[in-house]
Length: 608
Ligand SMILES: *[C@@H]1O[C@H](CO)[C@@H](O)[C@H](O)[C@H]1NC(C)=O
Ligand SMILES: *[C@@H]1O[C@H](CO)[C@@H](O)[C@H](O)[C@H]1NC(C)=O
Ligand SMILES: *[C@@H]1O[C@H](CO)[C@@H](O)[C@H](O)[C@H]1NC(C)=O
Ligand SMILES: *[C@@H]1O[C@H](CO)[C@@H](O)[C@H](O)[C@H]1NC(C)=O
Ligand SMILES: *[C@@H]1O[C@H](CO)[C@@H](O)[C@H](O)[C@H]1NC(C)=O
Ligand SMILES: *[C@@H]1O[C@H](CO)[C@@H](O)[C@H](O)[C@H]1NC(C)=O
Ligand SMILES: *[C@@H]1O[C@H](CO)[C@@H](O)[C@H](O)[C@H]1NC(C)=O
Ligand SMILES: *[C@@H]1O[C@H](CO)[C@@H](O)[C@H](O)[C@H]1NC(C)=O
Ligand SMILES: *[C@@H]1O[C@H](CO)[C@@H](O)[C@H](O)[C@H]1NC(C)=O
Ligand SMILES: *[C@@H]1O[C@H](CO)[C@@H](O)[C@H](O)[C@H]1NC(C)=O
Ligand SMILES: *[C@@H]1O[C@H](CO)[C@@H](O)[C@H](O)[C@H]1NC(C)=O
Ligand SMILES: *[C@@H]1O[C@H](CO)[C@@H](O)[C@H](O)[C@H]1NC(C)=O
Ligand SMILES: [Cu+2]
Image (cartoon, rainbow, N blue to C red; front, side, top):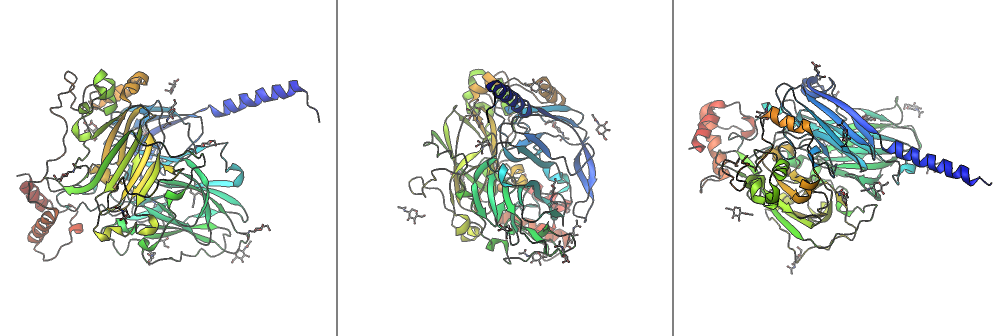
């Protein structure tokens, strides 16, 4: 059939116009952030951070190419706030990234702040508060980027988002954590676990169809195993990177990680199947017998049929061997980047400082926030912006040159696993030891830390998988690589919020000269600083006259005098508690700060 060329041209132009229009809309949200009450596990109503009077928080959905504008008003009254858009590169909009005192001032009660950036990425993301430790109070939700060009669009009928998270009954402010009364640094054990901010829910499906499930662990601490009984699936996206469809039946999803999977339903509607999440109990120090570690939700084919509880494949989560994310192949086939121009070698440890409390360190530095947001130090320091000194010792700055290839070699000197996240990038996964299949979850017991040896390691993949959050095994290592093509201040940190509080973070000053050339800070961002009483100029110490003078900078707590050991502190706190309570045996975890007197005695002792 012959179609006149003119009509073809006109419809082609219309199509282009349509595509451009449909791809360039602005999605605007007004977020009035207030306290509300919620009881998602049915066990304990509590105060949570709500948006516009609602909790669960709104899922943000945009199309690739959209501009996202979120007007935040802080009506909490007693808490500062900010929002980080996890996984968004913020290319050209570093000041919209969200971490307080890194790329902006905190938004104090009564202040407003507008986030405004374009989304040129695909996939599954989330947003969460990034000021102090605020997101465990419910301040987190999924952010979905739809892509009309996704290679898997023709492969599914319908999509769902399924979030999972740990849940605490106490407000963060009421949990004793960094304290002399918790010298081992034992992380608060969650009170329960949620799927979709609830429990025991059903995902109604039809037989013989394929569903795209977007999985997000938006918890504060605990990694989860995920599977669907009697159903395998195809992974098609990991942390916003499309992957070659890859068959799997068991995932490990650390906090902050995401996957999209395609699940094809059975033809029969006779049964319902458990969607199972199992807590990585290796992360938990003390587990109350009442704590439910595995949870069943349902792939529901038939509302009237039985909804059976999951059959556990293993009696302990460490016996499960999940799909290894190091083996995925990115669909865009980006090859291994060339050898690095700079290698950042860091060792993560946990230790006690002179106040007796437990902290976390990269190369003996526990991240301590500066007096001026680091981005603003870049903007107010002229030629000195390339000198790491001005950013202060305790922000642990590393200056990167524009377009350098960067390796981060992270050796884990700690006996716990940690999910590390880099802002502003995803990164290539080059190697990890031990692998999931080879002792990852049990290696802690060997007391034999292994560090990366650049002249003897497994070969790097030709098309390395990429993601923005990667778990490093206990006492093992990871090596990741990225290209410094996104000028900005980017945090690299453990995504266990408790460990971030303890200082397991460092800051990358990427291409500071280019940041200066391209960045204009909107007025409302400066106004947030004025409202917070935070200076927007000067070095990390707030010195705008002599940028090399860091006197007065915020410092980490001093080191313990030689001779003190963690074990000694634990023993002392034990005996102190025993003495005060007149008990023979008292669990350290049972103290949780309700023993003020002892805590004062011990702190006084440690502070000399
Ligand atoms: C935010 O919500 C609170 C509580 O509902 C209300 O009092 C306040 O007026 C709202 N503020 C804005 C700016 O919408
Ligand atoms: C979910 O089911 C479990 C087991 O039946 C029950 O203990 C729990 O209270 C339920 N959760 C909610 C929120 O109803
Ligand atoms: C908010 O941040 C400012 C600046 O760091 C600080 O002075 C103030 O104490 C904080 N307010 C709260 C409620 O944490
Ligand atoms: C968002 O940023 C764009 C580009 O800078 C600007 O044109 C627009 O006015 C901004 N919108 C808001 C609501 O600030
Ligand atoms: C989780 O919530 C999403 C909407 O936010 C919904 O589409 C999905 O069905 C829910 N999943 C379950 C298991 O209830
Ligand atoms: C994002 O989507 C586009 C179009 O579908 C695709 O070409 C590109 O590879 C995707 N990006 C990633 C990182 O997967
Ligand atoms: C469901 O039925 C279709 C068509 O009869 C068949 O092609 C497919 O293999 C069946 N699927 C399963 C999981 O049995
Ligand atoms: C749903 O389950 C019930 C109870 O097992 C069964 O009687 C019924 O036939 C099933 N319905 C369909 C459509 O499969
Ligand atoms: C799953 O949960 C049930 C109920 O709490 C418990 O009895 C069982 O041991 C758990 N299994 C695993 C592997 O955690
Ligand atoms: C950390 O401190 C210890 C003890 O002072 C020292 O042996 C070690 O070399 C330091 N590590 C780094 C990476 O600076
Ligand atoms: C290289 O590493 C492997 C695995 O860790 C080890 O078995 C081997 O002895 C090492 N070779 C050399 C030359 O160090
Ligand atoms: C940022 O944008 C530049 C082009 O303006 C591009 O070359 C670079 O790859 C982008 N970086 C990231 C991390 O998106
Ligand atoms: Cu950690």
